[in-house]
Structure formats: structure tokens, C-alpha cells
Amino acid sequence: MIVAKKFAVLLCAEDSDYVSIRYGGYYGVFVEMLAEEGETWDVFRVANGEFPDDEEIGDFDGFVITGSCNDAHGNDVWICRLISLLKKLDSLKKKVLGICFGHQILSRALGGRTGRANSGWDIRVRTIHISSSSSNLFTSLKIPTTLSVIECHRDEVQELPPMAEVIAWSEKTGIEMFRYGDHIMGIQGHPEYTKDILFHLIDRLTQRCYIEDSYGDELKGKLEKVEPHKDAWKKLCTSFLKDRL
Image (spheres, helix red, strand yellow):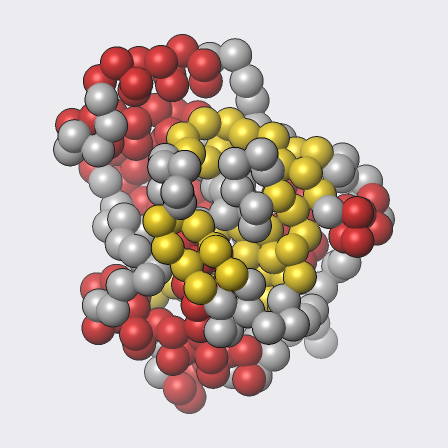
């Protein structure tokens, strides 16, 4: 008898009205990218204090940590609680995939350091480069060693945890991806995003005066001309979570 796999999204962001209506929230965005037939996907709104009980952690085959408007170097109660959970998941060797904030908070939980990027915001479709030591990981999946991904962040991993390995970098960010053992992987970009989500986020950032209107218009113009490698990212993320690498 085949037992269906079970995964959890640890939701670290509030859903905007646009994403809620269009995708069923950020949980829906991740499920659309990662879920396969026969699997169960749950969501825990950790930013609202909703966490899995210790007794149910073992029921899950893997966890995905989302992006957030919060800083991974902050000390909000839920962030500190999330760090404790991630340490526990590491001790249990559970599969954990961290995206953007999730990438940063994983690094912090494992002993690394995060903070503001000296070069400021990165909002675009950016090309990342796979490190030579990790190229076999990607060629086995027939994935190119340069990949385009949607980025929307102003923080970054500044120092890796001990024993972690950089597996991708870009001209702006030295640690675009890292791997820790065979069970933890962080991705600074947003493989789950579509360009319309990024357009919506640019509008929110200009409305909140995080970026100038003129800069937002410039970013939108550049986005019209490029596309992320969504299929390759889907293959990479699902293969990692589901032990196909």
C-alpha cells in the first residue's frame, strides 16, 4: 500500500487581496507549483502564531517556508518561535525548502547571519549562476547552469551556517541558493511567483513609499522583456522536496 505524502507550507506573509482572489493566497501559489496528485498539503500561518504541534511534525514529509514582509534578522515572537521549529526540523532531518525570507531564516536558524543588502533592493527577473561544485546536481535533472528567477528582496544571507554550501550566486547576491546536508535548501529568489504577482508587489512598494514611482515604472518596463525559467524551478524544487535528486 502506497502512503500519500504530506507537506506543509509555513506561511510567513499576509495575503494581499489580489493574491487571495487570483490564486487563493500565497499558499495557493505554492501548491500550484509544487503539489502533485495524491499528496496532502496543509498550511500553518506562522506569522499569525499558527504552528504545527510537536506531535504532528513527524506526519509531514517536507516543509516549505514562504517569503515575508518581515526581516529574518528581527526578533518578533513568531520569528523566534519559527527558528525553534526549524532547529527541530533539522534535528529530525525533515526536508525543508526556504524561499526568500524562508531562505534567510533557515540560514539564521542553522547558525548563519542575515541582514540588509548593501546594494539595496533587488526587484527583477535575475540570472543566477550555479556553482561549479553543484553543477552535477542540476545536470542530472537536465536543468541549465544559469537560470532566471523573479527576485523581490532587500535582505540577504550574509554568512552561511557552518557546513552549508553555496550552490548558486548572482552578480548582486553572493548567496542566491544554499544547501545544508541533503535535507535543507534555501532559494533567495521566488520560483513560485508569476510576473503579475511581481507587478502587484511593485505597486504595493510604491504605494508604501519603499520605492519611487519612477523606479517602479522602470522595473515594469524591463519585466515586459524577460521571463523566468518557471518549469526548471518547478522541477528542481519538487525533486528536492520529494527525494528525486
